[in-house]
Length: 149
Picture 1: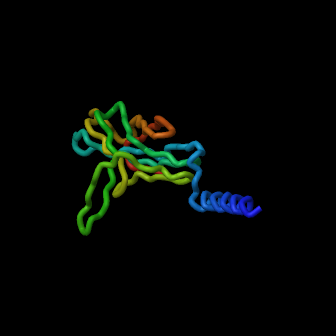
Picture 2: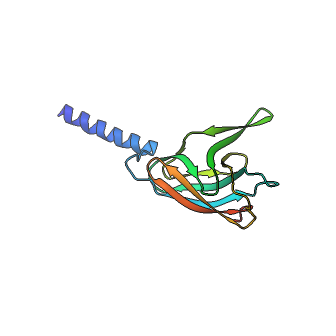
Picture 3: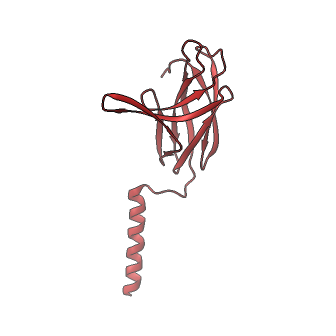
């Protein structure tokens, strides 16, 4: 009888712990990409930055990379203030929380686009594909120019 109570108590405690930590690692992620935009490259340069919101209405996932047919390469970066200096570093992977969102915005996380094809003008479209560990590849179209809410 005591063993059964102990096991039932332990099971209840584990369920409570899972609920408190938001654990739903078994649930599939449900990723959507929103408000994607690309800052127009300055003065004929071939380097630009893309921004968007990654919304996840399911289980946790990890962003592992990005690509675009209009760029030679796309890297995930994060900018942070370090004292009075802004620093930027590349990120290999970025966790996407379960039932949460990840925002790529100026002054924070962003997608650096290298070797952009010439001719990106305000209002143009840039295909982007984000690569996720669990969800696979998810594509969107980013608009060149400032975001509009």
